[in-house]
Image (cartoon, rainbow, N blue to C red):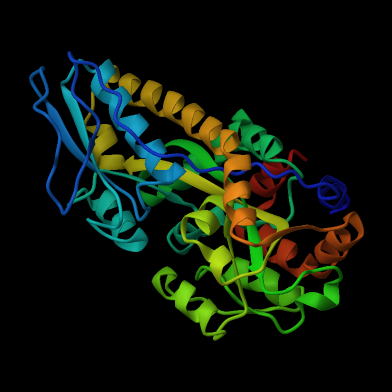
Length: 351
């Protein structure tokens, strides 16, 4: 825990948003984005052997979608048009839970890009990504998830649950918004904050004195506007994209949890591929991961400009307050370590 405290004494904003575009060549299958359930892709030039669907619960103007489309583009390019992927954003073919079930069964969605938070209900050991305040910079988080020792362990978690992990990207850290500044631990007391429906996330906010309240994302803006809730937490790109600065006066750089994005498919699809096809997917996933991470770092200032231009104030937390938050959250660390096991927990933190 001393290491976690030390690592959390500084925070670096590394968050982003970028617009998406198709960038296919004339001689390969184009990456595709479906609208209203219909593919808008031009006919590929090659003989299509595989025609797959990739689903997300994300809007198109987000790194999640960028990751998905770049992967689809590269698969089409490297397979010379024989492997086609159509991307369905905006939960067109299912929300997070439905997509996880569909990808495992291969009965609608074949690939999925989503944050790891909803996956914890299916794979409890993925709670490792819920360890709060573990990394002072997003670069250190990325190094942690790329560590071969950690990757081997986490890939086994996915495999045992029926999935093939193809890579991790991110949307930077999750941060808090509220209608007041946060200067001391007591300022969190009683704040009704919307979180995802993840027990570890809720336990963290409870531990530092807030009142977490899971709710559907579609309800958040209205509930903030009517003051049914006081606060919420999300990456900067979500805050900017949803114009939450219109109903929240402060963005507090809690940087409490990285917004991890996982690209996965089902074991049954993976096992039905030959070695060359697997190599194409792995190469495309690795390059798409790198691309998505870079996009998540390049657009930081633009997101900040949008938010501050809308009237919100950015608040940095002191090192002393971060240390207090970590101390208060000790029970959360202990609970997660018990759930994921010492090996995975320590590999993630580099211990």
